[in-house]
Image 1 (cartoon, rainbow over the protein chains, first blue to last red):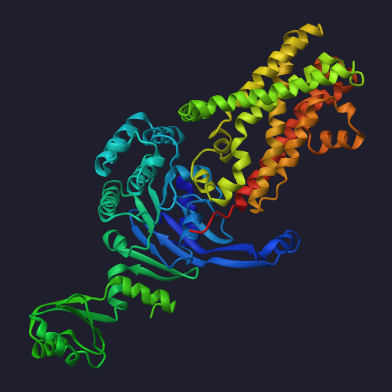
Image 2 (tube, one colour; image 1 turned 90 degrees about the vertical axis):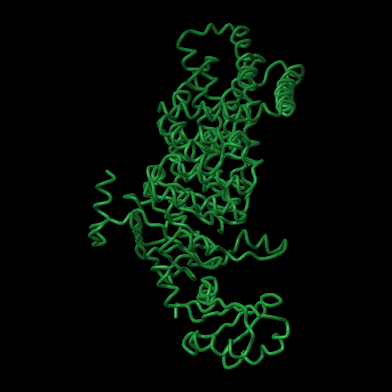
Length: 350
Length: 263
């Protein structure tokens, strides 16, 4: 049955290969009503409602190949979570086509959920009051995971994620980092080919983030699990994904290779330099001219920023060493955060 | 089916374990639940100390009906806990997401994730009261009566679940708590007394709009040998099945309308 579904979806889209996720012109509208304030307003609300239609996702098309790890980013309210919720079958799309792993998520939801793993960073998927291991046992029954597979996978996950210390603790007593690791393990116990992560590293410290990234890489490498993740932490994407999707106001702004995007969209270069001594500071204005900005990082460290089209790094460095006594120089690309910030602010990929 | 039975037992065991972790809390819940039940019976006693009969219903007949009304209601109370909190917990806080992400029917998860264990007391008390009444009324139950009894209890529980499921599903469309559940919940008490004592409007309402009479009154008429209600008694399984199907349809439409929360 699954095979037949997949064949069908490949046919209608005219793809020769079969992507694991195929989305065409996906749209989701929410109808909300304007709430009036106060007691009188609340009474009015009961009888007269002014409806507002908000289009959270607006004609999104994308396709993901098996084994890919795709980063899905966008500002708050851009439509990331709504897309993920449609892809996982939680929300029914207003219009558009959607096939994932051979299923139409909202229609075949109960069968489909056997083939996906889902982690929401903001909210646990585990039972709040019971011990982690008991939650896992419930999941084993829910997904009918054979005993041997369950033991093997639990063993591997416990080792990589270091779960053993708190397997017997109730979920509500775990720290955020611990809970996240458990949620991640829980989402993969039934070995789904497709994993959706919605802000999996939100609020985590550097060590926990690192743990989770390493784990995801490992799972992707050994099981060829397809991963789609949303995040606000772009270092997640740089660590994990080759491909990036940027959504803004419900529309896809960019879909492509991450390095390519950086090359195409990086506008600035930056040169970080370390002064020999404090006397040099007075001479700084001499170099900050003609579209070159210079800002202080710390006492002797400064950062120059300039447009790539306007200046070459070589020329800038030449002026720098001729003007100031400099101990060390680092040439850096524009950080991806800055590029993305520019895209969010302008609402376009220019 | 076998998987669902296993899952049910596992859910039940897990919940019981969590509940027993706070023994005093559970003990108090049982005591207060029993107090409420005993007070209810006390009212019947007081009533019959003033009057010899309620219309043409004797003390033990009314007691039988009162006892019978507790049994399906007790089962319903055990599994309906999440229905009361559904709008607040599952819709407004968005916890329904998690329910939708699992390959088990949404209703199974909502009804069986949490149990009001102390309400099993109502089932037990009701059964004991019925047994006493069967003795006193010399009803001489046969094998068939026990089967009818089991079927009627099941149908009654299904009717209660269906009615409240429909009311609960309303939260899929209206997030602001409209507050229709408490008045309907209060109507449950009508089922404890003979339907014939109420005016025609209430009789019609309890039979054909919110069919609580099919969960307590009509079933008991058979055991109390009131032949005039026999056809309505035979309608009980039909009413239960129809309302359950209706509830499922409304519920599924609600699920499709679920809009989750932001982020």
